[in-house]
Length: 110
Length: 117
Image (cartoon, each protein chain N blue to C red):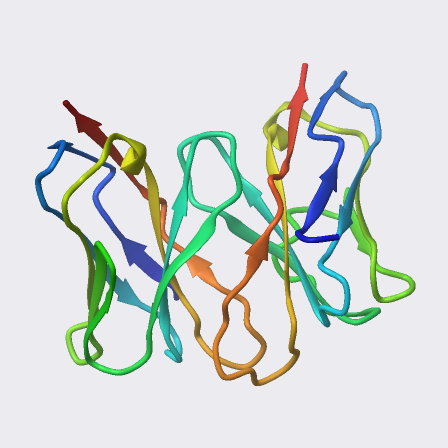
Protein backbone atom coordinates (compact mmCIF):
# COMPACT_ATOMS: atom_id res chain seq x y z
CA UNK A 1 0.00 0.00 0.00
CA UNK A 2 0.88 3.67 -0.08
CA UNK A 3 1.22 5.63 3.14
CA UNK A 4 2.55 9.15 3.60
CA UNK A 5 2.42 10.77 7.03
CA UNK A 6 2.99 14.37 8.00
CA UNK A 7 1.79 16.47 10.94
CA UNK A 8 -1.61 18.05 10.49
CA UNK A 9 -0.80 21.51 11.83
CA UNK A 10 2.18 23.55 12.98
CA UNK A 11 2.62 27.07 14.23
CA UNK A 12 5.73 29.22 14.22
CA UNK A 13 6.86 32.80 14.75
CA UNK A 14 7.87 35.22 12.06
CA UNK A 15 11.63 35.14 11.56
CA UNK A 16 12.03 31.70 13.11
CA UNK A 17 12.89 28.32 11.56
CA UNK A 18 10.42 25.45 11.20
CA UNK A 19 10.91 21.84 10.13
CA UNK A 20 8.04 19.85 8.63
CA UNK A 21 8.58 16.09 8.67
CA UNK A 22 7.26 13.48 6.28
CA UNK A 23 7.53 9.71 6.48
CA UNK A 24 6.51 7.43 3.66
CA UNK A 25 5.96 3.80 2.79
CA UNK A 26 5.26 3.32 -0.89
CA UNK A 27 5.53 0.57 -3.47
CA UNK A 28 8.38 2.08 -5.43
CA UNK A 29 10.32 5.27 -4.96
CA UNK A 30 11.74 7.56 -7.61
CA UNK A 31 11.71 10.86 -5.82
CA UNK A 32 9.97 13.03 -3.25
CA UNK A 33 8.37 16.41 -3.80
CA UNK A 34 7.31 19.22 -1.54
CA UNK A 35 4.52 21.52 -2.72
CA UNK A 36 3.16 24.68 -1.14
CA UNK A 37 -0.56 25.39 -1.30
CA UNK A 38 -2.17 28.61 -0.14
CA UNK A 39 -5.85 28.41 0.69
CA UNK A 40 -7.96 28.32 -2.45
CA UNK A 41 -4.95 28.21 -4.74
CA UNK A 42 -3.05 25.64 -6.79
CA UNK A 43 -0.22 23.63 -5.26
CA UNK A 44 3.11 25.05 -6.39
CA UNK A 45 6.40 23.20 -6.61
CA UNK A 46 8.98 23.82 -3.87
CA UNK A 47 11.56 21.05 -4.03
CA UNK A 48 12.49 17.64 -5.33
CA UNK A 49 14.81 15.03 -3.79
CA UNK A 50 15.78 11.74 -5.36
CA UNK A 51 19.14 11.13 -3.65
CA UNK A 52 19.89 11.15 0.07
CA UNK A 53 20.93 14.46 1.53
CA UNK A 54 19.99 18.08 1.72
CA UNK A 55 18.85 20.26 -1.19
CA UNK A 56 18.96 23.98 -0.45
CA UNK A 57 17.03 26.59 -2.35
CA UNK A 58 17.04 30.02 -0.77
CA UNK A 59 15.05 30.04 2.47
CA UNK A 60 13.78 26.52 1.83
CA UNK A 61 15.72 23.28 2.18
CA UNK A 62 14.59 19.69 1.82
CA UNK A 63 16.22 16.57 3.17
CA UNK A 64 15.78 12.93 2.19
CA UNK A 65 16.79 9.62 3.75
CA UNK A 66 15.65 6.78 1.51
CA UNK A 67 16.71 4.06 3.95
CA UNK A 68 14.51 5.60 6.66
CA UNK A 69 11.64 6.59 4.38
CA UNK A 70 11.94 10.09 5.74
CA UNK A 71 12.05 13.64 4.48
CA UNK A 72 11.78 17.08 5.98
CA UNK A 73 11.20 20.56 4.66
CA UNK A 74 13.09 23.32 6.47
CA UNK A 75 11.84 26.88 6.21
CA UNK A 76 14.14 29.62 7.48
CA UNK A 77 13.50 33.30 8.25
CA UNK A 78 9.78 32.68 8.25
CA UNK A 79 7.52 35.30 6.75
CA UNK A 80 3.80 35.78 7.16
CA UNK A 81 3.29 34.77 3.53
CA UNK A 82 4.69 31.33 4.37
CA UNK A 83 1.39 30.53 6.11
CA UNK A 84 0.08 27.76 3.87
CA UNK A 85 -0.31 24.01 3.58
CA UNK A 86 2.81 22.03 2.73
CA UNK A 87 2.26 18.82 0.82
CA UNK A 88 4.72 15.94 0.78
CA UNK A 89 4.39 13.76 -2.33
CA UNK A 90 6.17 10.63 -3.48
CA UNK A 91 6.83 9.75 -7.10
CA UNK A 92 6.74 5.94 -7.23
CA UNK A 93 8.05 5.75 -10.81
CA UNK A 94 6.69 4.86 -14.20
CA UNK A 95 4.53 7.71 -15.40
CA UNK A 96 4.57 10.62 -13.02
CA UNK A 97 1.57 9.99 -10.82
CA UNK A 98 2.34 11.59 -7.47
CA UNK A 99 1.06 10.17 -4.18
CA UNK A 100 0.32 13.00 -1.74
CA UNK A 101 0.23 13.20 2.01
CA UNK A 102 -2.64 15.00 3.72
CA UNK A 103 -0.58 18.18 4.06
CA UNK A 104 0.69 20.22 7.00
CA UNK A 105 -1.03 23.54 7.69
CA UNK A 106 1.57 26.03 8.85
CA UNK A 107 0.49 29.21 10.61
CA UNK A 108 3.11 31.93 11.00
CA UNK A 109 2.43 34.47 13.75
CA UNK A 110 3.99 37.91 14.25
CA UNK B 1 -1.77 29.81 -22.02
CA UNK B 2 0.87 30.42 -19.41
CA UNK B 3 -0.53 27.98 -16.90
CA UNK B 4 -3.11 25.26 -16.39
CA UNK B 5 -6.58 26.73 -16.64
CA UNK B 6 -9.68 25.18 -15.11
CA UNK B 7 -13.34 26.09 -15.36
CA UNK B 8 -15.64 26.67 -13.71
CA UNK B 9 -13.78 27.77 -10.59
CA UNK B 10 -16.89 27.20 -8.51
CA UNK B 11 -19.85 24.95 -9.17
CA UNK B 12 -22.89 24.34 -7.02
CA UNK B 13 -25.01 21.37 -8.02
CA UNK B 14 -28.13 19.80 -6.63
CA UNK B 15 -27.82 16.16 -5.71
CA UNK B 16 -28.50 14.06 -8.77
CA UNK B 17 -27.36 16.64 -11.32
CA UNK B 18 -24.60 15.98 -13.82
CA UNK B 19 -21.56 18.27 -13.90
CA UNK B 20 -18.68 18.78 -16.32
CA UNK B 21 -15.36 20.29 -15.31
CA UNK B 22 -12.90 21.52 -17.89
CA UNK B 23 -9.10 21.57 -17.86
CA UNK B 24 -6.89 23.40 -20.34
CA UNK B 25 -3.32 22.22 -19.74
CA UNK B 26 -0.12 24.04 -20.59
CA UNK B 27 0.32 23.95 -24.34
CA UNK B 28 2.36 20.96 -25.49
CA UNK B 29 2.18 19.08 -22.21
CA UNK B 30 1.86 15.37 -22.87
CA UNK B 31 0.64 14.22 -19.47
CA UNK B 32 -2.58 15.30 -17.79
CA UNK B 33 -3.83 14.27 -14.36
CA UNK B 34 -7.04 14.77 -12.42
CA UNK B 35 -6.92 14.84 -8.63
CA UNK B 36 -9.66 15.21 -6.04
CA UNK B 37 -8.92 17.24 -2.91
CA UNK B 38 -11.31 17.10 0.00
CA UNK B 39 -11.26 19.88 2.60
CA UNK B 40 -8.13 19.66 4.75
CA UNK B 41 -6.72 16.73 2.80
CA UNK B 42 -4.05 16.21 0.19
CA UNK B 43 -4.90 15.62 -3.47
CA UNK B 44 -6.07 12.09 -4.30
CA UNK B 45 -5.30 10.71 -7.75
CA UNK B 46 -8.26 10.11 -10.04
CA UNK B 47 -7.00 9.50 -13.57
CA UNK B 48 -4.10 10.01 -15.98
CA UNK B 49 -3.88 10.76 -19.70
CA UNK B 50 -0.87 10.58 -21.95
CA UNK B 51 -1.94 12.63 -24.95
CA UNK B 52 -5.46 11.32 -25.76
CA UNK B 53 -4.94 7.89 -24.17
CA UNK B 54 -6.33 7.33 -20.70
CA UNK B 55 -3.64 5.09 -19.23
CA UNK B 56 -4.84 4.93 -15.65
CA UNK B 57 -8.31 5.44 -14.25
CA UNK B 58 -7.79 3.43 -11.10
CA UNK B 59 -8.58 6.39 -8.82
CA UNK B 60 -12.04 7.16 -10.17
CA UNK B 61 -14.31 6.46 -7.19
CA UNK B 62 -17.25 5.06 -9.14
CA UNK B 63 -18.66 4.60 -12.60
CA UNK B 64 -20.39 7.97 -12.18
CA UNK B 65 -17.02 9.57 -12.88
CA UNK B 66 -15.81 9.79 -16.44
CA UNK B 67 -12.91 11.69 -18.00
CA UNK B 68 -11.88 12.31 -21.58
CA UNK B 69 -9.18 14.10 -23.54
CA UNK B 70 -10.22 13.43 -27.12
CA UNK B 71 -7.61 15.53 -28.95
CA UNK B 72 -4.79 15.25 -26.47
CA UNK B 73 -5.13 18.77 -25.11
CA UNK B 74 -8.28 19.93 -23.27
CA UNK B 75 -9.76 17.44 -20.84
CA UNK B 76 -13.20 17.16 -19.27
CA UNK B 77 -14.10 15.41 -16.04
CA UNK B 78 -17.77 14.49 -15.90
CA UNK B 79 -19.62 13.44 -12.79
CA UNK B 80 -23.07 11.96 -13.26
CA UNK B 81 -25.84 11.94 -10.66
CA UNK B 82 -23.75 13.93 -8.20
CA UNK B 83 -23.86 13.04 -4.51
CA UNK B 84 -22.87 15.05 -1.46
CA UNK B 85 -19.68 13.07 -0.99
CA UNK B 86 -18.52 14.35 -4.39
CA UNK B 87 -18.10 17.82 -2.88
CA UNK B 88 -14.39 18.63 -3.20
CA UNK B 89 -11.90 20.62 -5.22
CA UNK B 90 -11.01 18.92 -8.48
CA UNK B 91 -7.46 19.71 -9.50
CA UNK B 92 -6.02 19.26 -12.94
CA UNK B 93 -2.26 18.99 -13.45
CA UNK B 94 -0.07 18.62 -16.50
CA UNK B 95 3.56 17.84 -17.20
CA UNK B 96 5.65 18.11 -20.34
CA UNK B 97 6.78 14.53 -20.72
CA UNK B 98 5.19 11.14 -20.58
CA UNK B 99 6.11 7.72 -19.38
CA UNK B 100 9.29 7.17 -17.41
CA UNK B 101 10.15 10.74 -16.91
CA UNK B 102 13.20 11.70 -14.96
CA UNK B 103 11.16 13.63 -12.40
CA UNK B 104 7.50 13.77 -11.62
CA UNK B 105 6.97 17.51 -11.29
CA UNK B 106 3.39 18.49 -11.96
CA UNK B 107 1.96 21.90 -12.81
CA UNK B 108 -1.42 22.39 -11.21
CA UNK B 109 -4.43 24.48 -12.06
CA UNK B 110 -6.31 26.34 -9.33
CA UNK B 111 -9.04 23.76 -9.29
CA UNK B 112 -12.79 23.60 -9.62
CA UNK B 113 -14.59 23.67 -6.29
CA UNK B 114 -17.72 21.52 -6.47
CA UNK B 115 -20.40 21.78 -3.81
CA UNK B 116 -23.26 19.31 -3.99
CA UNK B 117 -26.35 20.30 -2.01
